[in-house]
Length: 139
Image (tube, rainbow, N blue to C red; front, side, top):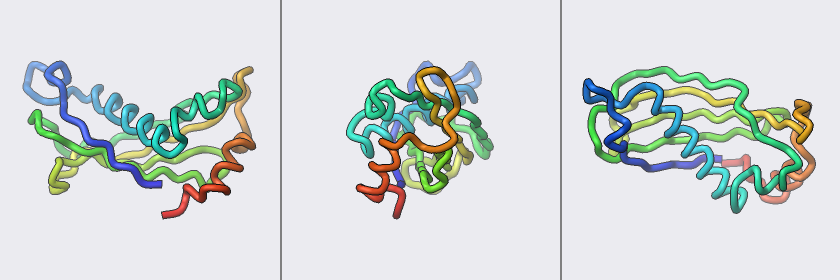
């Protein structure tokens, strides 16, 4: 599943040196991930799972390539891979609006846990059925 999230850095995102603080990139990625799942699952993934399961970030890796120092529009490009069957792998890049400058690249790994906080060894059945019915993991 591919998704593009467009954003404009807020004034509060910039540090005293006039660049977007490194911690803010995580917010952009979280906003993009949430919006992508809302698009593909007709609402948040958590509401789709009806509080039977939770989605947790297992790992997040960001490689900073260039700094964002303008309040122009930018894009987060997400490639969400749900073919694994155990976890969700989101690859991403953050680029300028013209897609000429790449600011960051990285991955986010998500897992499912039961409402008792037990790690799921595979996707919840509801997710498996939805993936099969909608074939959402194919380009």
